[in-house]
Length: 159
Length: 292
Image (cartoon, rainbow over all chains, first blue to last red; front, side):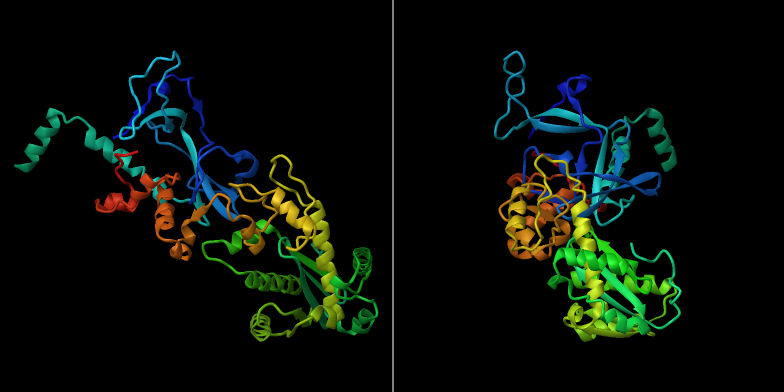
């Protein structure tokens, strides 16, 4: 079981805000590391607007991508996680230590806006990525504490 | 671009047109048209296949044909990025089809201007007879001649080849390299795969993640060869084609839909298909993750 340390994220200024700079692309790039994204990946806003969302266009490795920048639902945030270092700023060992079986992750950056890209399809409400947000409202209902009134209402309904 | 701002006064006379192409990215289709009655004069203008002419001579002929009141011309420039995008699209369009569409677009443009085209001459693109049929079906009032080496056989096609080649040369000279990375220059040579200058430019402008600046047509065989050994990128739309490489690429491509773009062995195991879960999760590709 992995652990995620969000303590750094709770302080407003301690981690970078990458809102609008996070992209989800419809391909798997077998590379892990930094790259000169802004020099090569140049999204352009188009004239097209669907359901109030401005369509964007970009190219990657010769393919045309169509994307949309969306805000994450309120109450939710995006985080960029990285392997947590075992020591904190004072050189002291942290409470959470990373092991092979229990990797420890740390929020390195956050974002509340991101751009997702489709290959040759205009972004729409039917995209799996946006549809996965449906889970949020369901999760909320599932985890809402049940009040006595609710129970009463249900038992009355059964009679 | 073309002489098409004004419909020529001879538009209602039967006209002939030649169409030829230059380059593969940017690809330029050029056409030249004139009244059939002008054909003999046209033959005396010493247009020859643009490839056999020196650049200065081509430029000179181009300037003179632009001034000729009895000649009309038009071009269609298809940029390398547009070409790659079409050729690498989910529903791929091959270069022949793109070429056919460009030629037909030019014919339509000139017809729409009110020019009475009765004969059109073109070089072969794919099977000549199939191409001729395709053109005749689309434009039934025009007689089409599709022939190999049309650019050296018919002066009207030679003229079109000059229009196309000069337009391409000029476009390349002014082509805006959009990428802003350091050391990106414009000394890309002729663009022929064998040109040492082109080879050196490709080698120098290769980027392990992004490949090349968008001036390069990625669907170009030479380009694929140069990118061997660089960072591999797997696309969902290529899944079926890559079937031979084992199913790991397929699995990873699916993962990317969920947002996992790292391809570690551990994440490979978790296909974000929502398999075994209720339909709600399956349809949204939501997977429960406990190991990360």
